Image (cartoon, rainbow, N blue to C red):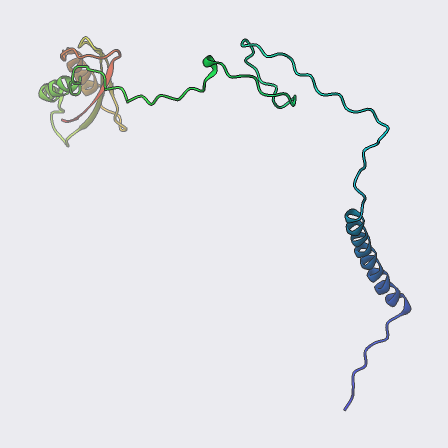
Length: 192
């Protein structure tokens, strides 16, 4: 049986290990010395030859004084006047909701109902034969009920004759006025 031997370390390696241990011992000794030195320090003794300290003179306090120098001066606090009493926050009850007329429903509801009822007008613009034609219209109506603009929003192009007929019929519409500050856009889908 063969026994493995530990390789010999060089003297340089041994010195490096000792130096590391020396630093640890030196730091621990320093910390211990500081700790012991603090506890054994003598208490400061007042100098008997020094003149006695003069008492601090505080300024006279009047009722007009509203600032405090308590953090700056070891003077007694100024007397509290009746005006400087701490105030207590009052808890107010929530305000009732304002009394206003009940909101009417959608102000444009009558316009929507009118456009649905008048959609049959566009039947005159239907192509004479062939497949059904789907048209997506965007009608911009002013609050006074007049038609501001008509736009056909189809992705596929619409024959020019049908487009002009639909635009003329849309401009002839006269929806009821509604309460609003700006013109509203209404979308209408037609199958011709």
